[in-house]
Length: 113
Image (tube, rainbow, N blue to C red; front, side, top):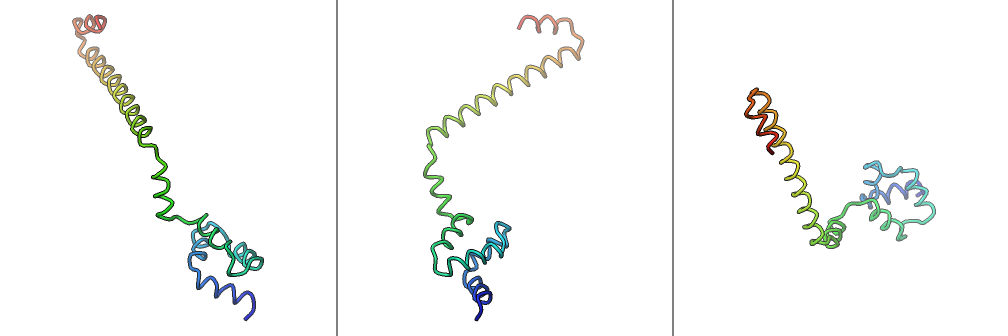
C-alpha cells in the first residue's frame, strides 16, 4: 500500500480528522503533509482534533471558570441600564403626547417637572 492509500485508510479510521476538512477548517493537502511528517500514531492528531473540535468537556470547563458573582453583578448593571432607558423612552413618549394634544395645561406640567 502506498503512502497515499495509507493516508486514505487512516482518514477512514479517524473520521474526526476528516471532519476537520469537511467543516472547512483545514485541507486534505495540509493533513496529508502532517501525516507524511508525523505518521499515524503521533499525538499531533489528538492535539489537532482537540484544537479544532467542539467538545462538551470544553464547554463544562468554560462554565466552571465563570465567576458567578461578577456575572450576577453584570446582569444587575444591565437591568439598571435597561430600566433607565425605559424611563427615558416613557418620559419622551409622555412629552410627545402632551404636545400632540395642544393642551396649554400640559405644557405647564412639562416645565414643572
